[in-house]
Picture 1 (tube, rainbow, N blue to C red):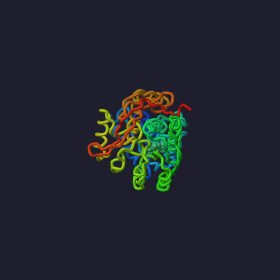
Picture 2: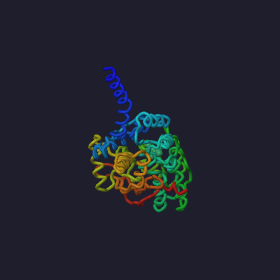
Picture 3: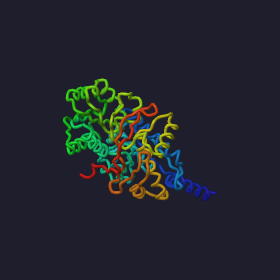
Picture 4: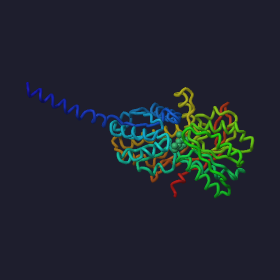
Length: 390
Ligand code: VNL
């Protein structure tokens, strides 16, 4: 009797010690998706979460014998919070992959955790060139600002735009955009006559736009992060900049599909360069946009959604390639070199840099079926991040 009790007790203890961990290891594949769900960057979180959930709904949550579990956490776009959440997800939840990263400071704050824990970090939004160099575990499915900016600096001087003032958010991606646009424009015989920087948090564009009006360039080049474009557009028009003969150009962050349709006719004709438009004319994109709208109360997907959708694709294929058994290093190896057709067009993950290589499109805002869209009119194929060559 005593012996039996003893045995039972031991067996129970063994079970409680081993079982939860073993089950989590063998049955579940956890993705820790850290996003700004509230605060200034909330639209980015909303778009990426919706896209990740759509990908899972379309592709199932049982992959290579694993149940895929998406754990969404709100970092409010404060990098210290991103870092603390990443630490908790790695240590307590034992996530297999970290993902998300709404803004560059969040990605940079998390890079060391990815390295130390050998956990792949799939960057779905942040777009400063150097992020992929902050950890060998970073894989990016968004874009880089040098990638998008150079194409516009090639287009501008051929289209009567020689003198340009730049206006960027004063942090990583803005500084990348400013630098690469300026250098390339000069190379092409144009000139950036003034470079203005606005704070990332609670920017007031009015005094900067007044200054631009006085400077009277051919065009104003703008980079602001997703979600801030409508405010710039509104003030640009209110100040009659367009009537004063100043063209608005920029990376596609400013004519963000999340906001574009509410910007009004003043946005018509604005030329931008970017990797994704909801109007991209391909069967894959048409299907994506329709499914996304249907699942999200008619919300139009933007470039953030596509970064999230493709990031999930990269993770799913890595689970399959490692037959559900891969640790961080094996998963990372399976992410490198993936090549596929995204709703944005063809893309691949450069095996050396772990950065995205993709087409960059020149687009003009036009009205189509009663709605405002970025309509692609030219393409530069397979663009690698120009920030990597230096
Ligand atoms: C970043 C770059 C963020 C581009 C963005 O929107 C964006 C970034 C939130 O690297 O912080 O459109």
